Length: 602
Image 1 (cartoon, helix red, strand yellow):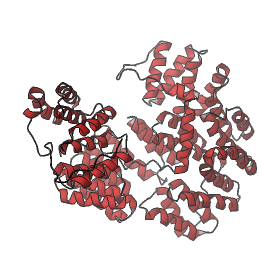
Image 2: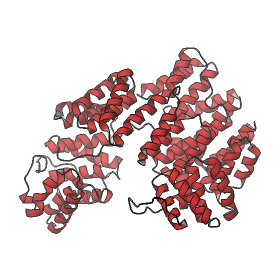
Image 3: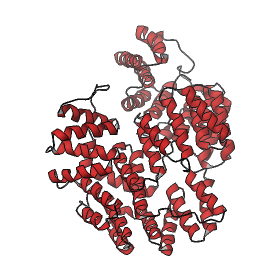
C-alpha cells in the first residue's frame, strides 16, 4: 500500500488499569498541577544532543540535571543536581530538584535526607513530607509516618496519595477500623471503588478474613479482569478454603484471552490443593501496591516522571515486588534508556514468575539498541525452549514484521493463536497483526479475513476499523462501509493523527476534496512531522486550488522523509505539480455509484 501506518505496540506488559484506578488518576492528575512535583518535573527540554560532559559550574550542573531528568537519565540527573545543590544549598529550586531526582533514581533514603533540608527551605513542600513518611513507614515507625502525613495538604496530589498511605500505617499498627475511617473521607470524594480493593488487602494483612472476603468480592464483582484484583481475589478465597471460587475467577479471567504469570502461579497452587499465600504479607507490601497501582496509571496517562517517583517509593517499601521492577524497566525503555532497563530486568531473580517476561524484554531491547538479528535469534530460542510463551511469540512476530519478514511474522502469530485458541476477545490482536503481515505480503484475501475476525472479537477496535476501512478504500471496495468504519475509528480515537489521516485520504480517494482538506489539516496538526500526512495534505490542497500551500506541504514531506519513499513520490510534484506526478492505483480517485455517508466527526 502507498501509505505507511503507525502501528501501536499492542504487546505492552504493563498491568491493565481498572476503571477504579482511572478515576483515581483523573483526580490526582488534576491535583498534580498544584503540587511542587509538577513544577519540578515540568522542565523545559534543552536542545537535543546538548553536550553535558561534566559541567563544573552550579548553573551548568543544574541545566544538565534538568536535561537528564527530562530524558529519565535519572542517575545522571541525581548526580548533577547533587553537585549543583552543594554549591546552592540555600536555593530551594536547586535543592528541590536534587531531592526529586534522587527519589526518581531510587535513592530514597538519600532523597529523604535531602527532603529534611527541603522542608527547612520550603515548610509547605508536600512531596518532601510524603517521602519522609514513606521512610518512616518502611522502618515501621508508623506513628511518625502518621504525624508526617497529617501535615500534608489534603487537597493536593500528595495529600490524596498520603491519605491512603496513612491508612496503611494505621493497618501496620493493627488499627484497621481507624484505617477504614480515615479512608471514608476519600471515599466521599468519589474514590470508594478504588479504595474497596485496599480495604480488602488491609483486612487480609490484619488477619480479618471475613472482612477481607467481603471487600475483595465487591472489588471482583466490579472488575473481574484486572490482574491485581483477580490475583488478590484468588489468594484470599484460596487461603480461606474456597478453592473453587478462586479457580472460577481465574477461569473467567482466562476466558477473555487474558493471562498473567503470577495468576498462573496462583492457579497451579490451587490445583495442587495448596494455599496460594497472601497477596501482601505486610503493611509495607500493601502500601507498595498502592504506589504501584497509581504509578502504573500515571505511566499509561503519559506522566512518566510522576510515575517514576511513585514506583520507586513502591519498590523501596517492597523490593521483592518484581512487577514494580518490570514496570520501572518499561518506563526506562520508553525513554530510550535501554541499558538501565536491561539492568533492572536482569536483576529479577530466576525464581520469579516475572523472569520469563523480563528475559523477553531484554531480547526486545537488543532491537531498540540496533541489533535486530540478535534480538530475533534470542526470541526464537526462547520460543523454541518454551513454545507456549505467548509474550515471546508476540514480540518475535512484531520484530519479524518490523523487519519486513512478513510470512515469518504471520507464522509466529499463527503459532500464538494456536496457544491461545483464537476464540477469546483478547485474541483480536493476533488476528489484526497477522492481517497486517498478510496485507504487506500481498495476500489481501487472507488479510481481509483476519481483520474481519478481529472485528468479530472486538467490534469497536479503532486500529482494526481504520486499517480495514482504509484498505477497502485503497482498493475501491465496499466504499460506504469502509468510510463508515474509518469515521467510527475517528470517533473512538479523535486525537489519533494517523486515523484522522486515513479519513482524510479516504475522502480524497472519493473525490471529496474539501472534506479531505479539513481532516488532513487536523491530522497534520496532530502529526506535523509525518511525511505521508504532509504529502496527503499537499495533494488535497492542489485539488482545491491552493497550489502554493500544496507545494509547501510537499516540501515539508520531502524534508521529513528518512527512507526515501515519500521523496521519490514528491519530487515530480515539486517540479510540475500534482498532474506531473505518476498516478498510481492507490492515489487515483475511486468511484461509487452510491454517495458515501457524510463524515460523522467534528
